[in-house]
Image (tube, rainbow, N blue to C red; front, side, top):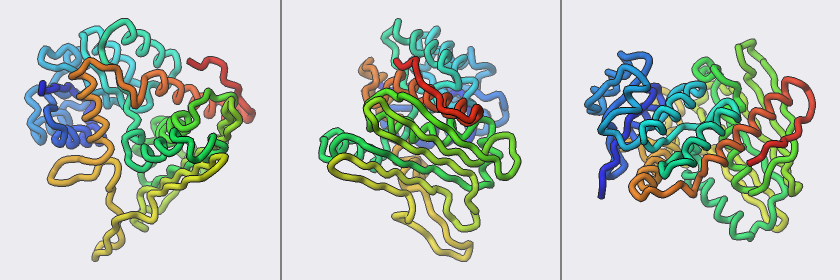
Length: 335
């Protein structure tokens, strides 16, 4: 089995999770890292035995030993890294959201469509067992056609400062927007967004969005950064789907595993990227393993296609536009 050698663009907290997950992916290894904070890049290189720390995105994307570039930069820097990697003949995994602008997403997609290179957006929930199982149930038609969907993805207020660089529609809701597009399998007709700023930060800390699909289904997404972390609950995630002949509900709380210690009540992550024996398993490991398999086989991803990630960005942008304008927004440019 051919080893897949990856160059990691960005060395933040989730990039560290990527490196932990690569430890659990057979035949995959990181050969280079880059971050604007070179000290941080050097630290991760030492911890994860990565041989090269690059001085620029361009140097990283052109690294002669790398088969692929794993883009885990801040959202507004995705386009530069993805296009430089494409020019260098590298396959690319790029974290969600694909972009913060539809035109930028289209530039990436168009660049890769002219090649046999793999471009895979990172929508981790398509690889999480519960959400993927719900997709199988919807596809089987046992629930009938999708009528309505409700999702929440709420987080502790203490984390907002770390993620407030972009609107919650692009950080939290983008996951559930993508799931709803996946489950409904239809274009979106119109949306209505609502936002509130309870604590006066640079971005809203409460967001609701209503999504109307062409086939008549309706989806509602919720994201709030208001949880009290002292309670030990860091994932208030749930998804409810109503079909014409059945319904489904999944939730991250109450959790399947929890601890009571002298430090209080704690809920470990057992779904997205749980740490076991020094490596990250769960959905993140499965997602990166799938990407590496696609690279080995020169096969375009089927579980998640770039155009689907682009359409999720289109819906998120329409929701934020609607919230700012206080009116419905019609969606025209579907691909």
